[in-house]
Amino acid sequence: MKIKTEVLIIGGGATGTGIARDLSLRGIPTILIEKGDLLSGASGRNHGLLHSGARYALTDPEAAKECIIENGILKKIAPHCIEDTGGLFVGLPEDGSKLKDQFIKACKKAEIPTQIISRDEALFLEPNLNPNITFCIKVPDGAIDPFELVFDNKRDAEIHGGTFFLHTEATQIIVEKNKVKRVLAKDLTNEDHYDIEASFVINATGAWVNHLLRYVGLKLPMALSKGSLLLTNKRLNQMVINRLRPPSDGDIIVPNKTVSILGTTSLRSEEPNDFDVNPNEVSLLIEEGAKLIPSVKSTRFIRAYAGVRPLFMSEKKGDDREISRGFVLIDHERDGINNLITITGGKLITYRLMAEKTADLICQKMGINKTCSTHLRPLPGVNRKKDLKDRLKSLDTSLSKKRTEILCDCELVEREEFEEVFKNENLKDPLDILHRIRLAKGTCQGGFCLYRLLGVLIELNKEIEEPVNILKNLLEERWKGIRPILWGTSLQEEELLEGIYKGIFNLSSPSPLPVEDI
Image (cartoon, rainbow, N blue to C red; front, side):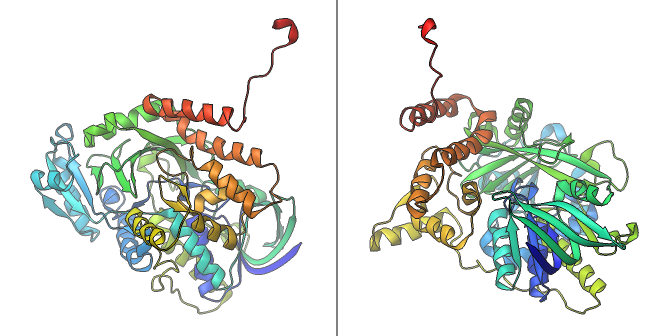
């Protein structure tokens, strides 16, 4: 199939969808292709931290300044995606206090508000906090739901004419006369092929940036840094808790909806899809997390996951934590390709700014004067119910009016919510539903709701093929996150679930022994 557009965006993370929204609001025809579902990379594999910029005030002041500005903008345009928890930077006895004054000065220079509070006030705000803290500083950190954020950017882009092709991979870039003439792509779900002609092509592939650039013989100096994280089965803290020391592993705990997220590690990786979490990382995160909140040691964990940060190396550094978290925008006209642009690096919180700068460059190269409005226009989901409390209120109202069916008991996901997504989204892979609603994100991690999901899928689509394989794939995805934290209660629950799925659903059974061995 031949397609023509003004701008082709490759990469469906926060940056790519943000660019699609920005360009669409400026009236510029845009297509985005993504080889998986949206948020398949680092955008869907992070802390969910609404940065104040304070973490970078000492080491990366420019990135810190960007963060605090975008922090304020996102609170205005995407309040439904944000929990304004506030954050604490605390000192432990072994850390000393020499960074305290430097930190406050650096935050002031970056215009990040800080407030020194007493130990007793900190423990009042966070009863689970280590009582041995030596000082505490409040900052405007928060929590953000990257999934809601990205999908609302996609919806707004589509409302204004943007088009998205998911599970569609670029397979070839054809350059003629110093310009990308065409991009060939393939739908990975049905083998359809696309021949896309665009005036401009944007590489927003994150950690896969060089995988795409190899099609045109280019390569950027990138460091791929894997960060692993752990989810607790309950919320341990109400504010973001950071440890004030030189950047290191396990120095932050972020509250996010019903859980807390411990992070993170930093390991150099060679592959952008290096999502495995090893036992040493799990042990390290628990050990370091317990120094901030001692009850971490006795807490049950429900999932481990990892993301790969794309870090642009302007110069070689001995430690990936020393590399700037700022972003870079590269016009490949410098390399002899006049209509190819790469945007990489950055943070989730700076996605909108990255999109704005990219769209500005496109407009400049097109010779048109169309300004950005994404910092002023709220995202379309601002009236959506926000958290578990809101869902409880909604559920109570539903029960009083009519009988409702709950698909996920942990996160109170109603069947109606799933059916709405199924109706309005063109899902090519059943796993994609898990990115769009909170089903399977609670304590059992889908153990007691994935089979319900499959049942509803079959009801809504009578012609669904190989439902047993769909269930196996859903369970396999669940298993990837559970395996690294499988001990204690989690192991007991997993043995129960194994019995249920083997015994009731007959998903797996031992191969029969040969007759001669019986």
